[in-house]
Image (cartoon, rainbow, N blue to C red; front, side, top):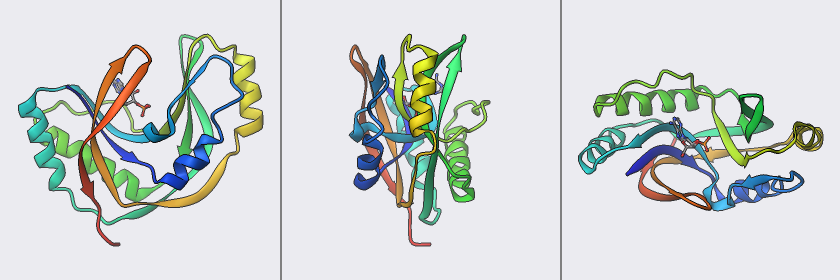
Length: 179
Ligand code: 3AM
């Protein structure tokens, strides 16, 4: 099974982000209920490895915290824009949680992630969208910001790669506790 660790978003945040789902031809928008912030992607694991990851994540204890969303950015490769995302304000508690999730995964026997953590919430995946359209979209929405929301937990997610895009299932929830 293909697993990753994520923060899911409260309903009002998903609703606010849904307003960004238009005005870009060729974009495949992430369904509002699937919007998430990935903390760590593990990829294919077997049932035993999934249990070890779950046990390590259960041992994480960090307080709940607030997270601010601001700005829109994109990931590019080979001179094309591949995805569009909303960014997060710099957050020490988020970095701490991500660091603990990373250590938990390593403790469960996985290789450390070498890429730097770049927190983002993917809004859309793009295929052959002309760069000018992306520029126009950024002009309109690039300064998007909204009130901070409370992060009260994180989740172990399973990803299914279907022909119409990825589908996600929540396998386990790990609540954070009062600050
Ligand atoms: O949060 P986003 O949508 O950016 O891109 C995949 C998605 O990230 C990412 O894991 C999240 C859940 O699928 N992902 C997929 N393959 C990956 C890989 N090989 C990957 N992240 C890192 N390495």
